[in-house]
Length: 241
Image 1 (tube, one colour):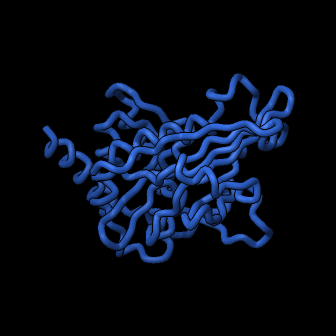
Image 2 (cartoon, helix red, strand yellow):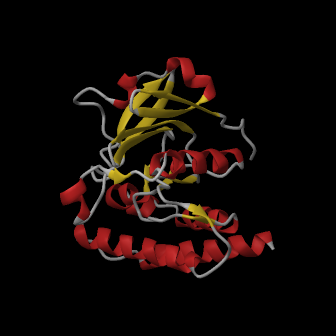
Image 3 (cartoon, one colour):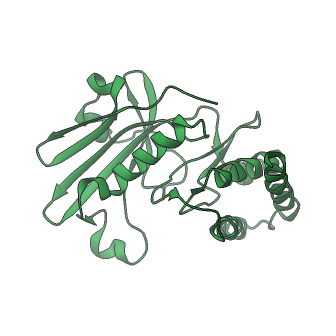
């Protein structure tokens, strides 16, 4: 499925740079990157504190880039500055724009902001909200029998066939709806790669995420569902070749 290409417009104000979908240029303001207290959260709290925002009539999801693990204790949301185009915010925006233009199931990138402070930068990304879709994790917690495992498998295979590597493919970053739709979100540090073992590594990472999630909520690992996902994944490749 082809879509209207995303054309990025970039500008600079003070110590901050902005990259925005050109048609939204006039409707974007600094306030969009500073939502008021109590703004509706999206997904799990750990996803960079993602919240709902609106830009020129477009429902969006704002995500602030934040480190994880032990590094967060020392640097929090700061990243070393190695150049504007090397920032994760601009990199993810441009990757999403490319994949969206190719018809792959990702959210349309709306705007990115990078602010430099000496040797470090902080950043944010706003993507268009996908209506009616919930993460695989949310489906498993609220309505396990309704999970469309085949849709998930076909979606993963479609990205892999296009050479798209997801650096953190987990149960929170794969969205599903009730009509068989599936999407990838949060492609921070994602990239295009040649075919290789990384595809199986992506699947193993997702399986580990599911094991951790189900153990946390006291449920068994969904073996039959995972098998359906793998069957759909491999059949998806056969259909294409």
